[in-house]
Length: 304
Image 1: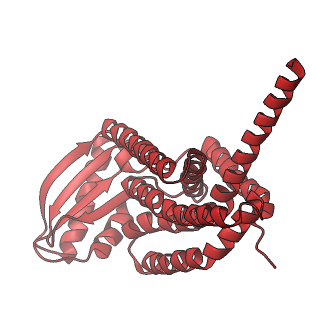
Image 2: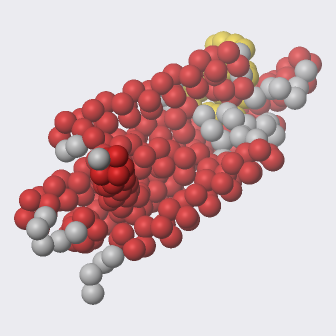
Image 3: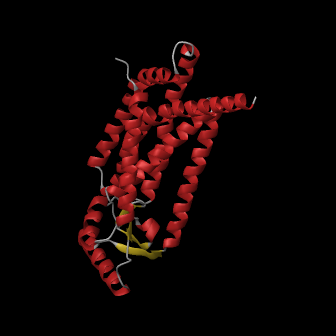
């Protein structure tokens, strides 16, 4: 029995729209959980004085900070702690900071303060603007590339599939109440490049099958055949990456999970869109254009 992707596509599109709509509703009701990269906060740089366990530092900070925070290592002996401080006044902030440093010194006695800085929300807005610009530029160049290699409608379908993946990732993060920060932006840009690869493979097979079977098969049948022929390759690639990233998510520290969870969602969404969104949309676009041509021809005949 042949895999009829064009028959299943309307249900798949409805599922995607349902997830995106749920994300929009949750976003309106609860808002997005923005990280300190976008909201601003305090940046504390500590010289631990010896190699340290990043996860141990995170455990200490979590005891004293109820808001979002990030802990990173700039090198073997320096820890960077970013904390949201919107709900704290200056006195409360100093108290929390002193408690964190004291607890870290209990574990790492050589700890010294290097710098204490305030990160404003203006930098976050600039970061958000640059992120949207990066995605827009990437999509534009991909559209041009696919247009040249295949055709304009293929490029349009691939672009819609990419935007679908980004929308699903954002919606999933909003629904799951995950923090949106620079790690999420990096994950989005990673998936934009990852997802288009599978879509191009499918379109390449569609082009080959069009040359072979254009007289024997309809576009729907060609798409169904092409997706079926590339399905094993698509699933093998996606599952290999999915299992690897999932293992990193399960075994990794919270800062790594902020990057890997969007990647996991993006892998599933990218595989889904390559099969059920991009190729059927290519068929729908051709069908729409052909109907428009028929209407114009009928109108021209009536005038004649």
